[in-house]
View 1 (cartoon, rainbow, N blue to C red):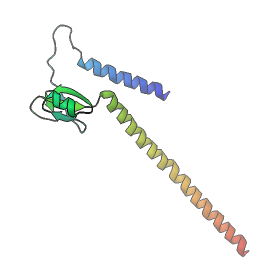
View 2: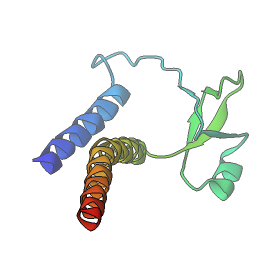
View 3: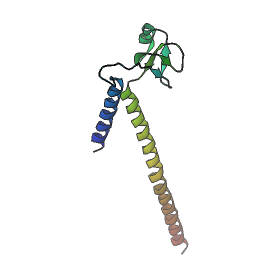
Length: 126
């Protein structure tokens, strides 16, 4: 169930990213200006330098990390960003579940151990 929902979300994001690059109207092209900024975005002056130093993909942009000159941006694919986001969300949810479920269980075990110790001590002195 979760796998099919995840697949539908990825397909929807892929379709949205594809539709965003298509023409809005059939005849007249739309003048687009690309701007990319972020922590994972690296900017290079030319495409050769980007291809040589970049581990991800290179894309020519008009504004890279708020620069005024056209540059070449290096950033991960959309699917990699989506997977990293889902992995981070899954990590946070797992940590919260471990804390929310593990803490009461540990407290119950600790109080049960304390109760058993008191009971054992009472038997020794009775």
